[in-house]
Amino acid sequence: MDAVRVALLREVLAGTEWVQATRRFAGTLRGAVAPHGGGLLLVGSAAYEPWHLAAHLDDEAAWSGLPELSPTLVRHRVPGGAPPHLAVGLGRLAAAGRGETLLVVTPEQPGAGLLERVHDARRNGATVLALDGGDRDLHALAHDALAASPAVPDGGDEAPADLDLDTVQHLVSAAAGENSLPAPRGHRRFRDRLARLADGLTAPPPPRW
Image (tube, rainbow, N blue to C red):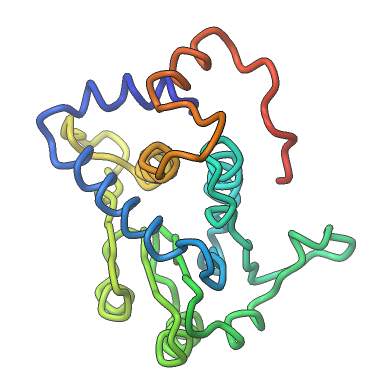
């Protein structure tokens, strides 16, 4: 979802809490990974790997001039032959501590094992954030959390303001880059970047994911 689609989505969501809520959470994320911080760790559950959010944050880091937004994706299972930036296992969470930010993203219950690792990271001084389906135990550990709307069963009626976790992630990642402080040189404000993207992304950053 590029900046044009994000802008259109915000128009649809005008009058709901989502635009303000995702921008608020993005501000918390941006502040937590401020320059001189220890980095951003991104982890999902055993069944949900947030690689899509990792890619969007990586792009926003390049476009906004905020390299600290580029995350390290922590994986429950690392396949053989994975490149270094996709080969970080759960053991990395044991080393998380003061100055680092741990963002947990999952639409389902995170599981006792992950919750224990998150608890240890927070106890060691890491800032814990959560984008999820509203798990109480995870929210109790998080310094800040944002829950997506519950999944709607097949055939159910979805309210206009209901957003799934994937859509919430798009809004948060876009806002994290949009609300950045101006770079010293060559920085484009969001409106300028929106116009540029509307004409076509002619030279996007090379994909890492």
